[in-house]
Image 1: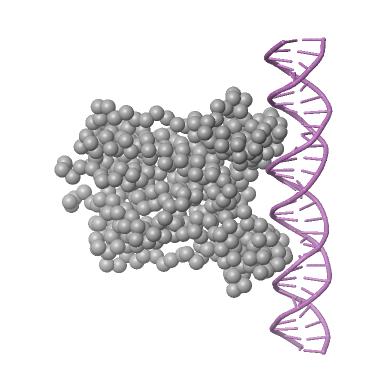
Image 2 (image 1 turned 135 degrees about the vertical axis):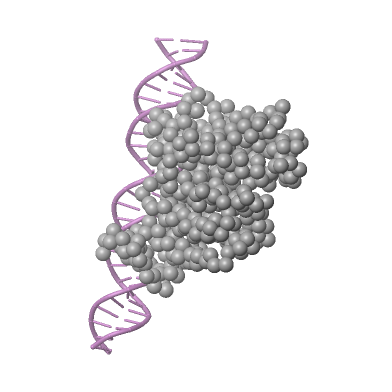
Length: 216
Length: 216
DNA sequence: TGCGAACCGTACCGTACGTTACGGTTCGGC
DNA sequence: GCCGAACCGTAACGTACGGTACGGTTCGCA
């Protein structure tokens, strides 16, 4: 089968076998611990499989990387927030949870390694890795959070004209310089309590900026 | 001379000749137009110089990249803001200028290419490129902006406890998701008027969050 | 028990690239 | 006009890596 056919199939649905998942987990582990330059030989050795199998399953090196990104994305995806009984306290808690989750994800060694690989590949055109990471990361969380923001606006808890713009501000308040610093190799510690504190602060700031004027 | 000696010399001071600057400009152009995979052969051809010369001047491939990053940084460095006659209008204008400059820089194709290379190299340890980009980018602007913030606090125009924390919030409000999207290859247009509007919005938001409480 | 499919490990091939070496040219100083 | 330094263009070398081929092993299945 051609690589193209294989890739299209991957794109539409990838019912990965247990073994294939284990292989992709090995790729993730390898990305984390040895950085960007992963060779097919490294992957095969680490996953205890033959290179021939890698090529049969994933087509080529880019296919392996793409499948790995998709696999990780499928593990991270979480449920949407439901907008039932939304009051000020529930909104704050949802936003804070959201911020905490996001900060935890982007500061994880897996996410850092994955984004580095995707950015490297985005530099040399020829690969959709960047787009895939973007779609499953930044863009996905935007789509997940916007319904909450709109529900909050409907409930009179927030005021804004464009949910996308509001979300991007929240994104900035939460992430700040964390991701770029980590991607560039800044060895900054980011323990869970600090993440929680930053999530709370970002949420406060966001609520301050977008609270309805006809209050306070 | 050894590569090590050459690198140390570069690190401390690099009085580049015109010709060397032209070579590094060629590297920058190459980074922008052909992405991450720049070979020494490509560089030599593009710069119309021999590979032997590249190795004599810069030691090795990493030396070329490092010198290129430093060269670009030396071109971008701008003067500090002076905190004379600081009133609310001057503060707002300084912040807005700052935001506009920063957004212009990070959305430039040169910056995108450079950051991609640095992140790629940061993945495979072995290089200080990431640290250098960080020092001349994110960290440098922090050091340049903090005096302004502190002067504004002294003048009663802002209220915060830690200038670094306040700056990071400003950084987040300005940059939001722009840099990560561009690095991942999102083909988003960002024309100058839109940058100006975003800079104004971010400044407004920042002033709202950090204005002294004993006012309003 | 025999057979074929799937897979592992390894050897192999072709190429790309970092690095070095070398012949030829330009140019400033004597 | 001659010399050496600096530099250009290109060829050459060694290695690393993507991709392929192949023999050997396991395992489901008749």
